[in-house]
Image 1 (cartoon, rainbow, N blue to C red):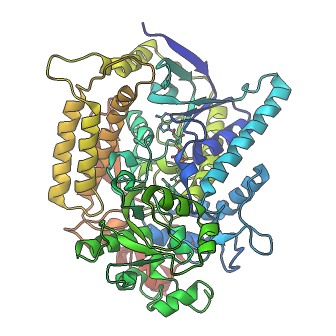
Image 2: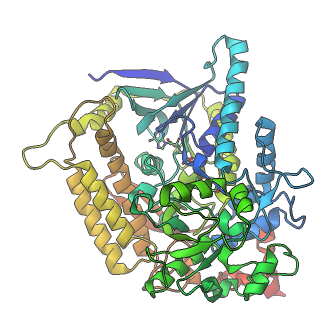
Image 3: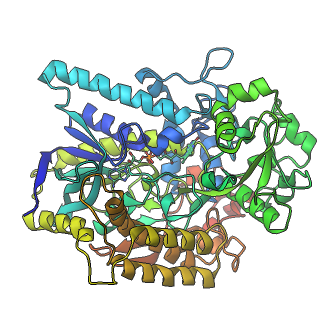
Amino acid sequence: QVQVERFPYDVVVIGAGGAGLRAAIEAREQGKRTAIVSKSLFGKAHTVMAEGGCAASMGNVNAKDNWQVHFRDTMRGGKFLNNWRMAELHAKEAPDRVWELETYGALFDRTKDGKISQRNFGGHTYPRLAHVGDRTGLEMIRTMQQKIVSLQQEDFEEYGDYEAMLKVFPECTVTELIKDNDRIAGAFAYWRDSGKFILFETPAIVLATGGIGKSFKVTSNSWEYTGDGHALALRAGATLINMEFVQFHPTGMVWPPSVKGILVTEGVRGDGGVLKNSTGERFMFGYIPDVFKGQYAETEQEADGWYNDQDNHRRTPDLLPRDEVARAINTEVKEGRGSPHGGVFLDIASRLPAEEIRRRLPSMYHQFKELADVDITAQPMEVGPTCHYVMGGVEVDPDTASSVVPGLFAAGEVAGGMHGSNRLGGNSLSDLIVFGRRAGLGAAQYLDSLDQRPKISESDVDAAAHRAVAPFDWPSEGQAENPYTIHAELQQSMNDLVGIIRKEEEVQQALDKLAELKERARFVAVEGRREFNPGWHLCLDLRNMLLVSECVAKAALMRTESRGGHTRDDYPAMDNRWRNKLLVCSSDEHGTSAEVVEKPQEPMRSDLLELFELAELEKYFTDEELAQHPGRVA
Ligand code: FAD
C-alpha cells in the first residue's frame, strides 16, 4: 500500500491564480475551511504575467462607458457565441470587483483627478482597462495574497492557528478527482519536491487551473499550463464547451528563437503603437471585416486622432479583436511582406517619446532589451501570433460556476462560455475576480445544502496512486517512450495542424497523430526517483494534454465555419447557422478518448438582445432566430 497524507477540507481550490485566490477568499469568508492547491510556487501563476490590465466599465476616462457597452463589446468580440448570462454578470460586476481589490490594498494607476486610470485595448469601445503600468496581474495577485494573509491573521486571533481556516499547498499537483457515486469526494495530489502523495477529502472543489497553451509549440504560456483542470473535469464526468476556440495573440516575440512566443502586450497598441509590414504600410486598414465595417477608422489620420479625441474619431484597426489582427499578420507574412524573422513590425518608437515609453511600458522595454537586444524606444519590435488563451473550458452554470458534476466548480480560464469564440484583452482578469467570487460562493452554498459528507473509497485512492507511479515501471526492452519526445511531437502537431488556420485534412492528420501519441504515451517511462523529477511530472501532464488536444482537434473538425479563434481555410466564412451551436466534449473516467456532440445554446434574453441594433444582429443571427425581434415584428 502506497503512503498517502490526508487532509479534510470543506472546499479545495485547485489553482492559485486570480480565479483561485478570489474563490478561496470567498469560501473562507463564507466560513468554510478552505485549501488552495497550486502546482507552481505560490504567487507564480499566469495571472502574475498579465500585463495590460483588467476590463471594467467604471467610466473614469470616458463617462459614456457602462455595463451595457462592455456587454456589447464582449459579445461582439466573441462573435455572439458567448454565454450571454456570463457576459452580462461579468459586465455588471467587474467594476465592483475592481473597487474591492483596492479595499484589499491594490493600487491601480490614477487619472489626473485621482480616479483609477483606464487604458484602451482591442475591441473595447472606451478606455476600460484598470492597470498598474504593464504589471497589472502582479498587483492583483500581490493584493489577493495580502488579503489571504490578513484573513489568516484573523484566524490566528480566533483559533490560535494561522492556517485553521485557509491553508496554501504550494508546489502540489492534483492528478485525480475522486467521487462518491456521482458527486465529488476528494482530490489526489503529489508534492513536487518529495513526490509524496496527498489526499484532500472534500465535498467541494473549485477548478481554477488556467489554460492549455503548453500543448502548442509557440505559446505565451508557461510550463504549468497543461490543461490539467480541463482533463480532471472530463475524467470526473464534467463537460467542456468551445474547445475549438483557441486564441492566438497577434503579438508574441518572434526573435531570437529561444524567446519565440513570449507575449508583447496589447497595451503597446493601446498606447499608440502601430503594426507595419516590410514596406512600412500600416496594413490593418486593409483587414477590417464586414461585421466591423463602420466601427473602425479608415484612414491613418482618423486613427491617430482617435487616441486623443474619441468622440469625433473612430478607433484604429490596430485594435480590432485579437483574432482579426492575428489572421491579418498571418496573411501579411504568408504573402511575403513580413519582417526578417517571420513576423511584422510593431512600432511605438516613432509614436511616443522615449521617456513616455519607458514609463508606460517598463516591462516591454526590459523584455526586448534583455531578451532580443532591441531598444523599443528607438527601433520597431518584430512580432507574430502566439498561442495565448483557450476560450474553451468546463461548461458551468453562469450564476454558481457549478459544472454538471455535483460539488465540482470551475472559474477563470479553465471555465468555458464567457468569451464565446474570442476573448477581448483585459476580459480575463475581470472574469477571474467576477467568477472566482461566484465559484467560492457557489461551493459554499453547495456545502450548506449537503446533509452528509461524501465518502472516499480506498480502492480509488490506491488506483490513483498506482496510476501516478506507473511511469517508473519500465516496459519491456525497446518499448519505453521518452515523455519529452512525445511532448515535442504533440506541440509540433498542434501548432502546425490545429493552429491559427485549419483545414479538414490537416486536423484529421493531427487526430491520427494524437491517436499514435496516445498509444505511445502508455509506455512513457522515467529514470530516477519521485523527488524533484520533472520527467515524471511531464508523464502525468501528458495524459491531460493529449486528452484536451483531442477535444480541440475533434471540435475543430466538426465546426465547419470560421469564427473567432477558429479559422477554417476550407470554410472561410462565418455561418450564422453555427452561431448558436455549442460543441460539448466529454470522456469516460479514464480519459480514454473524447466524444464531441452538438448542443444548442439558450436564446439570449430579450432585454439583452434589444441592446443591439437589429442591423447588427442580422450579421450574426439567422432569420428564424430574429423572427420575434421587436424590430421585425413591428
Ligand atoms: P492561472 O493564473 O493561469 O493560474 C492557474 C493556477 O493553477 C496556477 O497556480 C497553477 O500552478 C495551478 N494549477 C494548474 N494545474 C494544476 C494542478 N494539476 N494541480 C494544482 N494546481 C494546478 N488577461 C487579461 O485580462 N489582461 C492582460 O493584460 C493579460 N495579459 C496576459 C499576459 C500573459 C503573458 C499571459 C500568459 C496571459 C495574459 N492574460 C491577460 C490572460 C490571463 O492572465 C489568464 O487568462 C489568467 O491569468 C488565468 O487566470 P486563472 O486564475 O484562470 O489561472
